[in-house]
Image 1 (cartoon, rainbow, N blue to C red):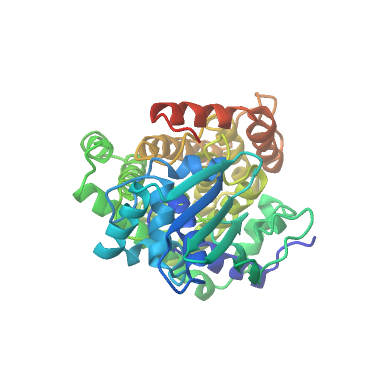
Image 2: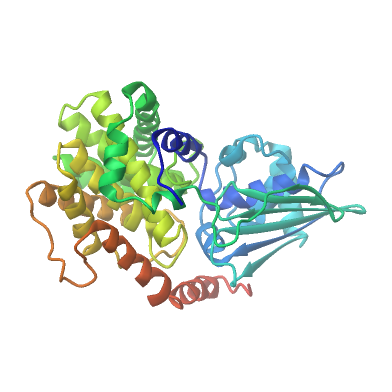
Length: 428
């Protein structure tokens, strides 16, 4: 597998940095159900959806925009009633009072079932919908919008071949590169090719402002607004916290995602936007830092996995933000590596216990760590490579995080889910 060239990287950014409404995992379940429902002539009567454990865990407790219920059963029912995939990860913007009513009837009459397939280690959603004598099925795999199969009554209407040994994620090609090579690749890009990334970051700042003006009852944004108001890092923590709390509490505004996830987009772009403002950096400088950050975020997600026992919003997005801050401040490739090493020794043990408003606290803390790690790095202050799971190169640091997340914590994810399900007496 070769390395990514400039044109491939630009195309990849366009595919992975885009608007997302609500938490990505419920949107994925809804999208899968909608893809099946598109094949039917009449309304869905029965829905069965199967999800991998990480997808289920991340979506079971998070709010759905414009809807007053939570759960992957409701997400699937909404997607089936919407019956269209045209809005991609913004599928929930099509919720109407009639769709809301019909989705609730389906779920609350026992006509929607959710199953967890623990054998599926990557992103996986398979939805079967019965309508009269018709049965439609759709499968999403390895990426939140990667539809690989659609069938009606056993007849395949669409199929994308899964390549042996490949996750089909274009970010896999990034794994063949070093962090320094990714930085140089971004430097080869023209300002006009990246300027749109600044607009996406500005969208996330607007969502953060909305979160501060319309605080969630949980109170995270309100507490940050009252107690963190004086410095550059305070502003980063406050706005990241407000944006993520608002988004995961059902805010009906789309955010700009990164590596297919809205919270990762917020955790990555907001610190860079604030740093550019404080450091009086121009749009070109910010756009290159954003491009680098988005690509490094995708790189780390490809190595570690998008859904695991480790919080990849912190281990991937905030770590990428730290390295990108160094780039924005004019640091060297070696210093970008120092930032990743510093983050490896700081936030790599943070667990993922699903999407919920409490993620705002995690990401505010990770943002603080990202800022500190970058400030240390720019002054050539780095944790020793002999410290814990730290390593000489940033690439090996990321590999070590992946080893902990996948091999070392193999049983942790199921225990987290067991605890979460136990609170609601769910038998899944």
